[in-house]
Length: 565
Image 1 (cartoon, helix red, strand yellow):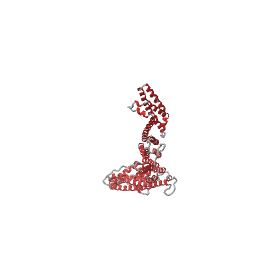
Image 2 (cartoon, helix red, strand yellow):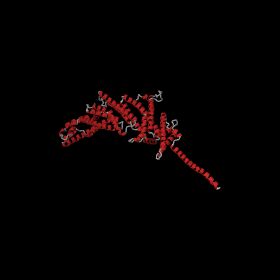
Image 3 (cartoon, one colour):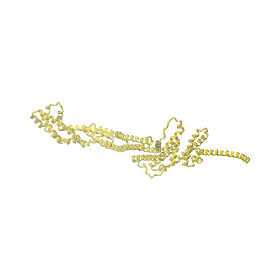
Image 4 (spheres, one colour):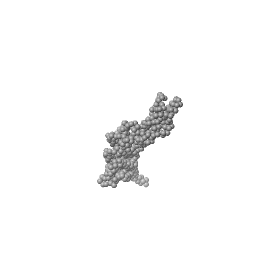
């Protein structure tokens, strides 16, 4: 029995040993299979993933982005394998994955370009796939920039054609549009330029809103992708210089600026034609302010570095140059003609015409978007060109006039200027200067009225005599006082009205009354001095002489004030 068992055991033992060996080998093979399967799943793209990533026949969808993300993950994890002794496998896997990634980006690049051709921004239906594609493509800044260039060129042509259609009413196919062409109002230059600027500004606003949805919705991811891609590019690695990080807002503004550049060129040509053909200084000034308004709007929209803003500002400068040139022509035309002062001493016709133009300019300037801090300086500059030459010419006409008429005329001119400047809240400096000038001329008129009272009353010599400290008492005699009293009695009844009539051509009646009343008050003060001197002489004389002086000159200061009031 034992021999039988021993024999059987001897016969079975090799088989069992072989079975154990096979089982161990099978276990090792199974472990290798699991390891290989894990390796393939982690480091190798499947056939379907390879097709989704590289085949141009397959759409760009979630499968494509998943395969691209896996390929990127494979390349990053292969860096770990490169740390082991055997680097052949890692190098082969990384090389294959890098090729797949390259094919994937090329496929994505071409797909984005095709989509841009048919993308309707006027009625945008921005899908998540396009935004995701741009975010992924940002990791390849060169391809991303090429796509932006392609997009900008396409949008530039589209907007240029749309602007041309808005101007003429004809599209590229020669068919009429339903919108009234802007060129139909070319006879009204201000409205014509305003409508063109409004169209371009509206197009820029719409373009920016759409591009914000397209490019800035995932702005952080976009910036992160571009910065990482730029850091990985060879030219950046070998470059010693440091580049600024990608600025989404600046890139967006630059892209919008490029999109509307074609329309901006057409706009510049049309506006230049309007400016150069215009011969009205008021219209030139209004055009300059209109361009300044849209310049301020574009500055807020696109920033200070956009070409569209620079173009509008250069047009504004050109309009102001035309405005100044037309003003110079008008000034030369006025000076070439003989000018005279109106008989009623009102401002000359050329000054009145200039003031009418300045009123329109002030009204236009008030509505402009100039900052409050610089408004008064800006308006002073404008007035210096538009009205100061005419003011100087009007003053030059008065040099040969008598003092009274010259002062009345100059006050009338300056009153007209003040009435004009009163419309604006930003001409206080000019208003103050004119007020001082009017006060100076009013003082001259006040002295003239006082001299009229002195001469007309016959008291001029007496008043001058008593004001001399060394005058003798013998100079004031009863006969002299009697003659002066008679002349004074004839003068007083109509003195005030006659004095007012001398200033009858002064266009401010209240100012004329004020000047005359002040002169009358000064005359009364002088008369009081005369009366006091006569009283002092009476005190020094005997009673008979006193009665003689008082009877020769019975008027008192109180009576004079009543008669001149």
